Image 1: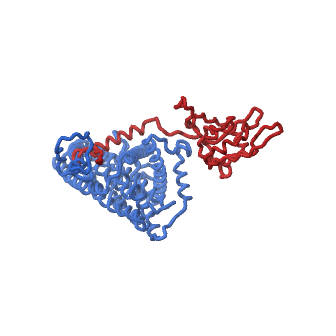
Image 2: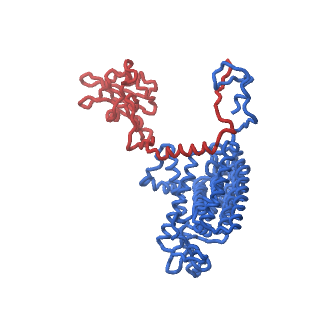
Image 3: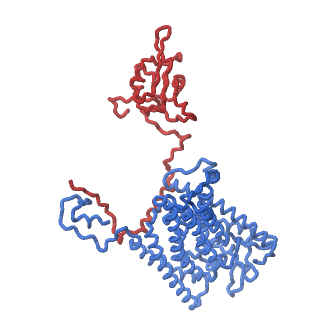
Length: 439
Length: 166
């Protein structure tokens, strides 16, 4: 318990639970507003700006509206699972945040309190377990609605989540190898220790993680489970009022948690760049900031303003990823379902596996050489990863993976005879039509 | 006649790049994101520009002494294709004809503007106006007093010699 007495631990943990939960819920509310404003700006519109200054009270108005709406229960729905669906979807989304450290430790008269709700020893494994759990809410909700669209949405959700969890997990293994531990506090400390965020030495893992995170949060271009144009709104077609709202909150909570996770794993979490004064990690009964040349621990110097500054850094990094999520959503069209599966199994999985071997080998070699864990170590891995990322992008590029519906085996046959028709026009059902029409 | 089909020139799958196309798209949306010229018209504060030939709800012109200009000739209910004008004419002591009842049912009206065109004394007009919301359906039958109270500008008639209204 980080050297705190059990009473202090209990009180501080309860306070952190309340604080983290409220901040997360407020962040979710404002993520919806950010989504609406940004989507509007991207489409050259204004977005909601009437409720309160700059539309800042819009989420409250939305909430009131959703609470006051009629609650419907489809006649042939399976009532128990229909009610259970939204709950199962929202709880993992909110609970995942518990293991993400959001600031440097805060010194108080009763001891230095770590700014993380629960520093569980299984860290990343807990995140993976809960993110797999959240798919049950979607599947149950979709199946219990007894609606063909909802059912298809639920099916798609399960297939997609399972497929991308593989790549997600494998890209995390690279981090675990470099961090040597699964707790997220240790991951942050190792990034501070390396004096380099993991996004550089593990760039391909970052790319794979971001793509999988898009798929895991069901955001465009992977919003198969709720594809509006195909499935109405997919798994939550039959939901209304607060039950719908819970799915909605869960979606945005997932978004924020995924962003926070990316910030923590790859951008150093609450770490302030180019400054090691904020570094703090609990080891062997004391807060340390690093090791000196002889390997002896250097004591950390926590301060309240450092906690505040690091929290601001964390919020900034998380917010950046939230913005990227929104930006991508309003840019890219949806993948076709077979393309999603193709990308997941034929690209992400082999790429993640190959990268894992490569980075594992590189770490082994560096350790054998006896290079100390520091900037040089990081730069060496960065070089390896850059090459790997270059190969990956080159392979993914050129449309070999995401192709059109009909893939001509060869080049289109040359025109048979010179004809007088204008270019770009073909005659149907003339004999030359078939070849010319193949896109 | 043979059917002609327009063939879209798309790159072959092996020659197209989802990655580059996606990045280009991101750049495009970012350009729009920071573009300060939004197309939204902030309606109650900003009013849309209406054409001078816009045909909205009616308005009755009045004389300086406050009497309606209408002489109850009965041309407008006759020409009205939607049959939305109800006119009951009367005659005063000097023998001037005036409308006793003049009602326009704005729900039935199709805003063709023929009442304005046909009016010999330029009394009834359609207006350059669109904010007509009411709380009850009955309020959409405009009586004579209501028509005389309207203040919005009236529609300029189409002039065949000036086809573009310049």
